[in-house]
Length: 156
Image (cartoon, rainbow, N blue to C red; front, side, top):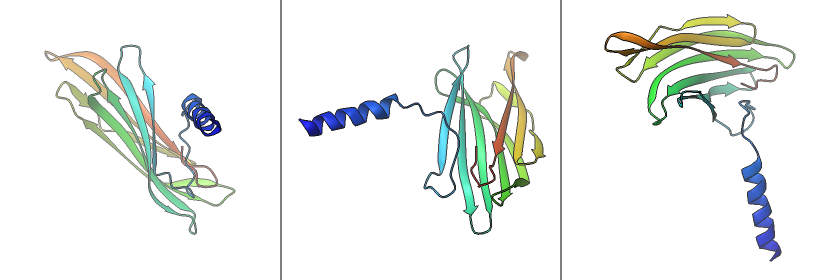
């Protein structure tokens, strides 16, 4: 009886805890996390951070943050991503390098080449997606994705 009660309480606690954090500790085994932002039209933006390389003894970490625009049928339409390499010391952090990519997965959408901004401990990639219907733009969306690193090498 006690075992069943403990399991039930554990399941309730697990299900009631929201998962909204995008922070990563480079000393953990976590290699990626996804969050979803639902839009008013039923579409949504899925954002994922993946740690590519971490070297705590050198104080460097490299990761990619990707935002993918998806429709209500769960089809990926287009995405924009930023990859950043950060150098951290415990008291400061700097983005040493940043690159960006954008991709269209639907013939209805075109996506601009992303603009990249590197500033302090952040790297941002911004692209514009345009949906066409019979050659006419019917929807435009600007999507920016920012990857940040804390002084202790935590990506968010």
